[in-house]
Image (cartoon, rainbow, N blue to C red; front, top):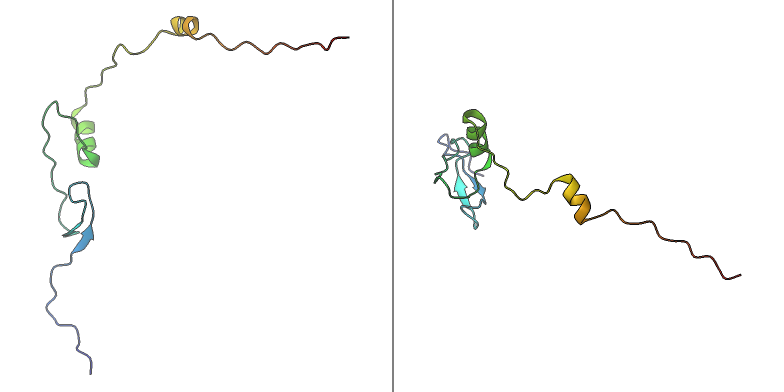
Amino acid sequence: MGQGKSSKQGKRLVWRITAAAPLGEFVDPDAPPPAPVRVPGEPGEGGWVMSSFDLKHGAEVSEGPDTVPDDLFDELFPPPKPPQRREPPG
């Protein structure tokens, strides 16, 4: 008849597609996530691992001079005027 399952089971692997492996790869779902290599000053995709690291150790946030004060913004971009009603000639 049919063969039964062997008592020896191999390592369970799953197929996963990630940015590092766009064509996919087999990974062990029980393995810890790989630690990303972070190069200072280089922008990149950190994901939840880097986000957790930044939350634990702090993150530097700076706002550049690309914001315009409210009064200058209103001077540059005034609110639209309501349309004027035209009276029919009468």
